[in-house]
Amino acid sequence: MPPLESFRLTKEAAKHRVKDNVLIVTFGNYAFMDFILTWVKHLTDVNVSNLLVGNVTFYYHPLCLPIRILPQRIRGNELKELKVAFFYLTGAMDIKLLEALYWTGIPVYDMGSHMKTIDVGWGSPEFHKMGREKVFLINSLLPFGYELLVCDTDMVWLKNPLPYLARFPEADILTSSDELVPSKLAKEWKDLLLADDKIWDQNGFNELVRKVYGPGVKGKKDLVYTFDGKLKLGVLQRAYFAAQYQQLRLQPYAVHTTFQFGGTGGKRHRLREAMLFYDPPEYYDTPGGFLSFKPRIPKSLLLDGPHTIQSHFSLVNYQMKQIRTALAIASLLKRTLVMPPLWCRLDRIWFGHPGVLPGTLTRQPFLCPLDHVFEVFPSLNREYHAGELPEEDFGPGIDFREYSFFDNPMLPEGSILTVTITGKSSWLEVKLREEEGSGNCSAGNQCKPGVVSLPKNSSEEMLVQLLSPHSGVKVIEFSSMQDAFRGFSSEARSLPPIHGRAIHARDPPPPSAKFRNRVKRYVGIWCCRENLKVGHIFYDMYWDEKPGWKPEPPRTKEEDHPP
Image (cartoon, rainbow, N blue to C red; front, side):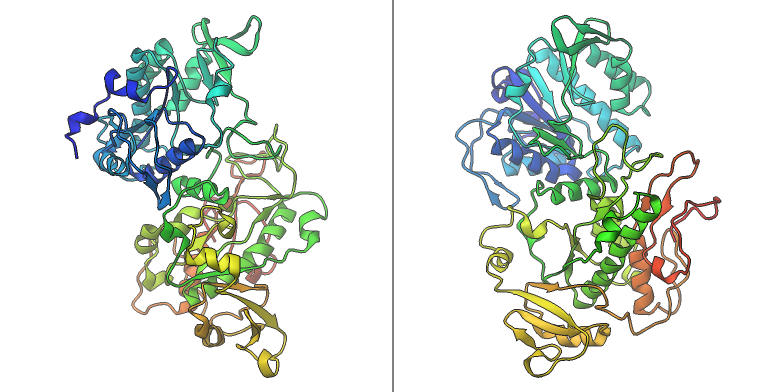
């Protein structure tokens, strides 16, 4: 490992990452290392190499140092041996990231930020510090005289953007909504953020741009004067530089994980659903194997009647009940659940709206992200499982994967799961029966190769007894989850709701109560009804056990908590 001084950002070091006077830059701390690897992999896939990663945590890799060419391996996916230098830079905000990227072979420099290595969380003081560090980065790079393409790490490039951006040589700034700045604006942006450490860097940028907005640049319909009336700004087309929503079936240049829920975990899951995130090989394998099922949704729930709050919740609740059963069976069999596609009739955002966001072309119903309904962070975060949801009160954690998991082309070639999917050699289908069959089709026996029979409304003992002999099968797929499980034998209902941290009782709760206490926290809210001060509505994992349940916002402060 070279001395830390070797990772300082200088014009001499940066010039080795420049191509056609363009330098592509990202930055982050160790908590975002997997995003940085994803960002780098997508750029190299489209033959873009003029990039730089800035380390905000502690360590960043010297891909910004004079050419270090070696065979690359990112998350177990072998990359071709690069015959050219990397024309990008990665800025490390902490030393841990700097060191990790260095040994991965990614060009990196030390931003000297000395940030925490953990996910700091949106809106926190450390979050705002990270935004300020981004502006410091831009101010330090602009004097080098290069054109900058500055990127957040929670986005991916799907096509080489440089030919498209070259269409606008007169522009001083091209922005998707919140970045990229020449020197005078960059300096005022920095000064604004230094004057108030609570200002979000993107809001600060917007405030400066809107000081003057217009008129348009003569003869350039895509450019407008802004800031001091002299700076020429172009806004990139959202159809090609997208922020989540997909409708026109165009191939965008980039996708940015905005307008999503669940924090950083939600961002990862969105990219995984889109099959764009690069995970290590172990993500595609698990000691206990996987559980999946074929969802059944009546067309009437999808299409009948107007798209209202009631029809939306009727559709989501119907699917939620099946997922609840699948989570229970996955817990009993110690398997990882592969979620089904989730359908919604209403969109979700942070404020009141009529069902779809004004200005969008959303067709209803639509395949919605998991984080529209489920709390992806507590569901996927193992540390949260162990800390906030201890096993003695909430039962074992239940892992799950995105609905597109089996279709992902990034499944490691030659892995057990790849062989299973292509050849069905380790794939067992479970068919539900009204009554026990006879002969080879009796419960637990294979009616034909790869198919086993199971009575409807099986008990937990029956599920474990009949499916344990197939524990070596990589994937067990249920033909349906409707009436697949009658419920836990310990029918004592759940403990009183535990809001916040667990309440430790002398007598541990029964398995049914533990499971209930856990999965109740797996669902979130829908937001929001219009013209109400409190317009959100809580999803309820056990809605079907409450006669007369209706999707309504909390009426009082005391009611404003998860069920």
